[in-house]
Image 1: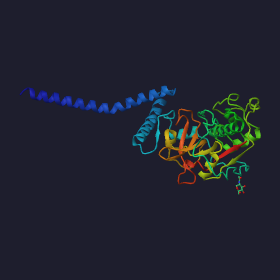
Image 2: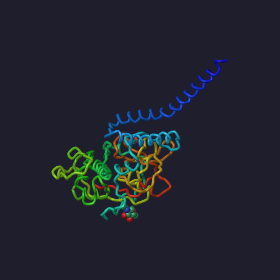
Image 3: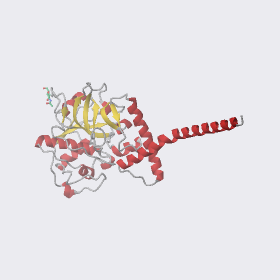
Image 4: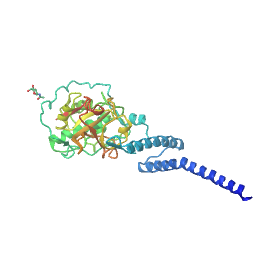
Length: 341
Ligand SMILES: *[C@@H]1O[C@H](CO)[C@@H](O)[C@H](O)[C@H]1NC(C)=O
């Protein structure tokens, strides 16, 4: 009888301890694993922060992004997957500010781009992949410089050059960033059509290896620039808001396209056919290098991006094709163009 109160006391204490322990486990364990995830991610992508305050701030963003990505993938509601990639410690605003760079507001200066040479193309192959035809260089990485426009213009210039000469030569984006400054604005953005204008007037571009990418605005190196290897004589705009016109063009050569790449799902896209959400506020220049259809019948555009090969499907994204809206998914059919030999 004397033992009873003691036992009660011990049991109550144990119960309280157990509840406290399990609660604190519930409270700290996910954070502990998230901290570990963040540390592993930092090691994987070689990221470091200047002090603990910045690290704590970045951790919070990382955690929010990871939770979003994991719940998106678990829901499995879309035909594409997201992944914790090198952009995982950036807010969507930071990401948009530093990785895109297509100046939608400004219209290209020239009116040369009036004809559409593929207007009367009546038959196109069921699928196309310009990579397998040797017309596409390896995926490049624009880094923290908003010069997507230069990467897109260079990719289609590389394409037409290979189609006409048989030689695939990697060309210089930095030359466009540094030297094409009358309309385009280097890391602050530009338009592919203005870049084509520059390349025509400049009588070509030099090679990537001669004038390598720096990822910052610099002074035009006229000596390097004078060694030109690939020229174009013109460029044409694909009639706007027609995926069937875009198809005729992409069936014949890689095509520069502008898209709205501003959403988180684009930031963290990893695989599958991207179906949005996305709007039509064109903020990113990329390159349509093919098209096709999945085994379940989903039609897609094969798009080369310039965010390195760790993003998406080895640097590429498949974007849904032939959607109900005339502008195409993320506005892909709104401002497409290509250089001509
Ligand atoms: C397409 O065909 C029409 C009618 O034959 C012709 O007038 C037009 O010039 C052709 N367009 C091109 C780009 O060949």
